[in-house]
Length: 137
Ligand SMILES: [Zn+2]
Image 1 (cartoon, rainbow, N blue to C red):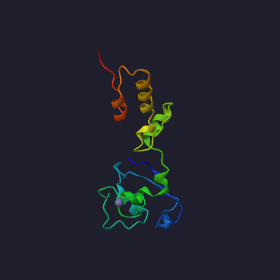
Image 2: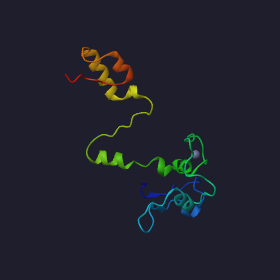
Image 3: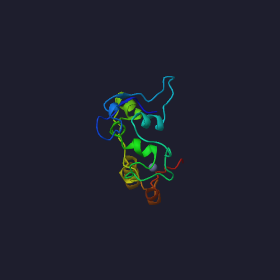
Image 4: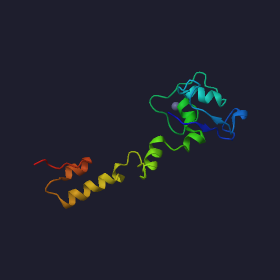
């Protein structure tokens, strides 16, 4: 669920009267508003648009679907996720790794280290597959 936000005070928001105003992401009854309601309040014309493109559309797209329009709004782009906030509040550091680059994941580096230093238990095949496998015996 999205958090309440402040609508960006810039010309990306069609409804001038809404610029810089707070926007709740839930209805008066506490239910999530949904993409269409959020965008309509901001003055976007949502008629005929799908919630999301399938397959997922390109990030460079600007208004192919409701999800893409909202994903380009500055307040949503800069919002810290609830997951990240929870982790940070607990005193931990939250690091998001680049998607599709498992070689940068620290667990992969640990696997490689284990393979190199303890090769009797681990094989290069495991490293190639990105798996660490330690025998039970
Ligand atoms: Zn799209």
